[in-house]
Image (cartoon, rainbow, N blue to C red):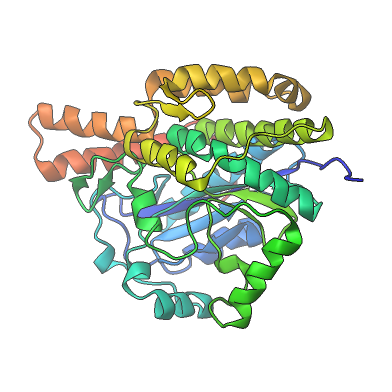
Length: 384
């Protein structure tokens, strides 16, 4: 008998560090910045693969409002510490014009191994993401929900896009981060496993043959966390605005409980092939929510706003259970005013239309990202 999951929630975000004067990334982390962040945040602040990045993670939170408060605190402290070191943080999955070839890697054993094994693929990893953990202690339930939840991952990606630019070029994609990420092995949609033991056998094969050190080197869009008893969603870009992050985390949380609710009533979400789901993933990567996504049950392309309302109805009891109608409903606001990718493209076009040079227009995008990354985190000092 499966015990009902506790559905705790944790959120990880990866920020880029920029020079406020040049608007370029800092190629080398300011001395003492990470240590000062950790002095206030402990293990909630950690280095990332590149020195121009820093990662934060909330505590395991009992509900979405607690997660919001903790993430706001993390953003605020990182922003204030960065400012003391002459830098600024931006929440964006790519930088508008920084060059990956100029970045310096963080000198840690794990990152040295990744750089050695992945070579040029790793050197291009100038991208940032957002991960959401939901507490599901039962191993087999976690695997079962993972196989079903794959279907909804493109819908989450479409609401999160924040990476339309790459090295000064408008890529034509709303999430170019996905294109860079997919160059790595063991990314993308996970296989559908019938049990946790089947998943373990696959992982053991990779470990025993020396292909990976452990399951942390499996980077699927959704995975059983190797460190926590959670199901970790990894498909999304990082949202520039805090409230957008919380919205996506709340939707993911409610979606998983809806799937669990189906299961205890001897029902389940139909399992679709990775081939079909990957087409929706591509639509979200390319167009965000603009083109809509395919409803494979109906066999046709559906406007995204209609899909959102349909899912809200399906998740109604779960939204009520978690008391997060406001956070989930914020998706309608995102649809009305766009994701970070929309704002970045609009800022760039407006600057160009006003006579800005190419570089000045891209710098205007960075200015917007610096400003919007701090929206909603509260005012006043936190004593840094």
